[in-house]
Each structure stands twice: as C-alpha cells, then as structure tokens.
Amino acid sequence: MEKAVQLKVRKDLDSSQQLNIIKLKGSLIAKGYTEIIHIVDQDEEFHINSFQTPAAYKNEVHDFIAAFISKENLEDTITLCKG
Image (cartoon, rainbow, N blue to C red; front, side, top):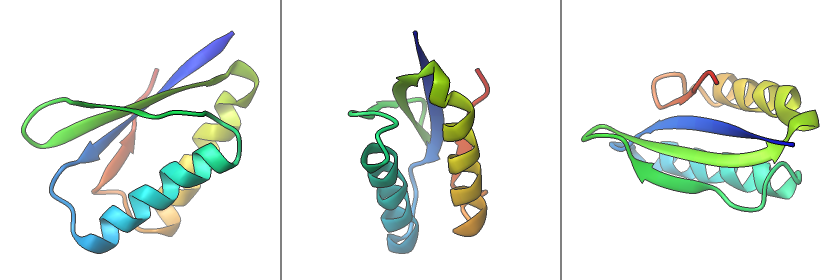
C-alpha cells in the first residue's frame, strides 16, 4: 500500500532556495521514492507538493527530507506535513 507524503513550500523563494527545492524533488525521484510530484496552491503564501511512496519507504523518505531541509537551511522554506 502506498502512503502520501506532503510538503508545504513557500511561494516567495530566492533563486538559491528554488534550486534547492528542485534538487530535493529530483533526488526523491532519482532515489525511486516516487515517479511524480503533484503541486497545488494552498493559499497566497504556500504550495502543497505531494507524492505517493511505498509504505516501506515512508520513514526513510521522511528522514531523507528532514536531513535535506536541515543541510540546505530550508527550515523557513519547506515543511514536511505530518500525516
């Protein structure tokens, strides 16, 4: 069974933040955690990026995303939604 993963991403980003968000999404796909990431508007400030991943990868995906956010100093840019 697949599990949904959601990320809340700030819309107003500088070029460095945009590049890091693209790197994160590319890494998620390259590592085989997902094949596609969906983007919808939440409100004026945020997008919601969501994807399905096999249940066996859910904890690994969460750990990977948390480490990436910390490494790239994106704490104010992207949030892993609990779910």
